[in-house]
Amino acid sequence: MKAKGGSSEFAIRSHEIDYRGQATLPALISYMHEAAWDNTVTLGISMYDLLRHDMTWVLQRMRIEMFRYPKHSEKITVATWASGRERIFMHRDFRIYSADQELLGQATSVWLVMDMVKRQLVSLPEFITALEVVPTEEPLPFAKGKLPQLQEATYEEQIPVRWHDIDLNRHVTNTRYLQWALDTLPTELLEQKQLREIDIIFRAESVLGDTVISAVAPADEDGVYLHKLSSQETGKELVQAKSAWS
Image (tube, rainbow, N blue to C red):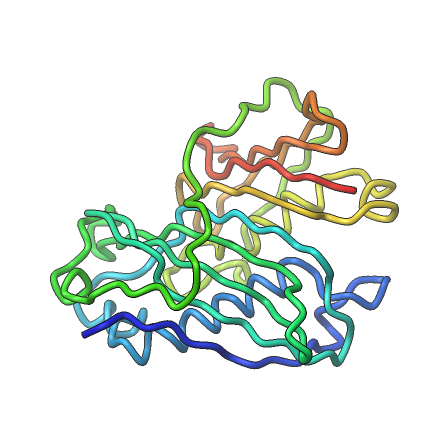
């Protein structure tokens, strides 16, 4: 079977916008996840298909570029397709279009499979590797390589993990990590600049009752910030990211 891509349509809702009346990045990533879910259902490799084998999808990395943020009530289409596969990785790309086919943003991502019982990463199961990956559109460059390490935090927050932070996999959902990373930035930056690009790596899970330390500092490049989220209990790095603003 060929792993063909698909597309899903959405309308930006009032609780997903910022003070400018534009969709927030966590909201747009949630739409990307919904479009990916719709596509994997048609391929027989959705999260529910994996859960029947005590496995699940987990997002390992995502790099997003935004050219324009859609406004409240604006209709968008999210196109998505499997863009590549390795022994333990599945690459998936996204493009967000306006109603008149303006390219609003794009993203590339890396997905792994986790054993739900052992809470360990495993190789892609045979029913996934049996799929023939046929990219629907020109693949984006894979998100690879290291990000610069944050050495000393300029801004820092302690965030308790609560019930509504937890997803179907019983750990903190990736959009919540993104929200925490962005919320730690100074208000002046969030008010005066727009997030144009972010590269985010998810390294470990956190669960209900944990406390997450969100740290951020300016990078050497103008308008670029480095982010680190870690566990207060263990000191383990949970998330690393680099964001660019203009």
